[in-house]
Image (cartoon, rainbow, N blue to C red; front, top):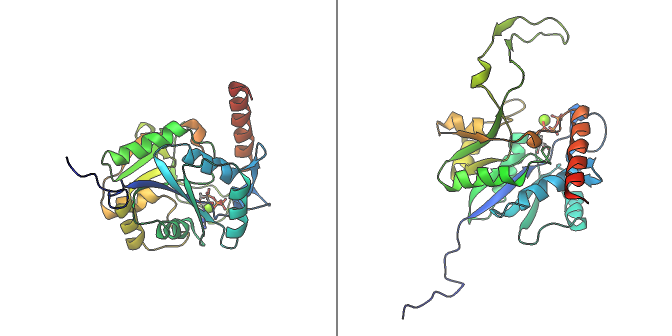
Length: 255
Ligand code: CTP
Ligand code: MG
């Protein structure tokens, strides 16, 4: 009879973790609490984002990157709100730029994590199907996977004006059908993303897109369909849209 390895010496399968950068101030949203802590439908945006990641059966660990001095407050929030029990949670303080915050989140990952999803706290309403689709594309072998949507607006490249409000000369009009607006969660082979963060220096405001950093390594990046409800809460009107999406969900779920 073949001997069965005991639970302690059986190698554990590689895990998928979600890193949630939530350390931004939310300047474009206007004065108030840090954006991730603003409330939507009575619940902080960050809690919605954590629940969206933990809802995916692929995700067994969520690392929240809190505002630099806000880690105790975020830990308290996690204790206060019901979260799925099959998932582990870690909170680490973030940095001055999103790029630094993501790197600090990556540094907190345990060794057995092989796949990483990076998800903006500012995209609280991403559906679980989008999370699952990204995670499974990475598990199937793509080193970097980005959910994205075709654009509604035509885009122009301009020479930015020195003074806000001044007319700006148009340089080019890319063919709209070839453009995609990218969302999160973006999914990565862990080693590829760690290498990108080690090699791409923080320049000014830093990179706002992890996949772009992986592109600079020369590694292949693919796009999969994103979702309208994965929009980023950036400006005040986005809060109105987010509340409307939540109200529609509540009406559809009948609670
Ligand atoms: N983020 C972060 N650390 C930073 C800056 C941003 O973790 N130093 C996070 C934000 O909390 C957000 C995500 O990165 O979840 C996307 O950034 P963005 O939408 O630009 O959020 P903010 O930087 O908070 O907003 P703003 O740029 O308007 O200040
Ligand atoms: Mg920002």
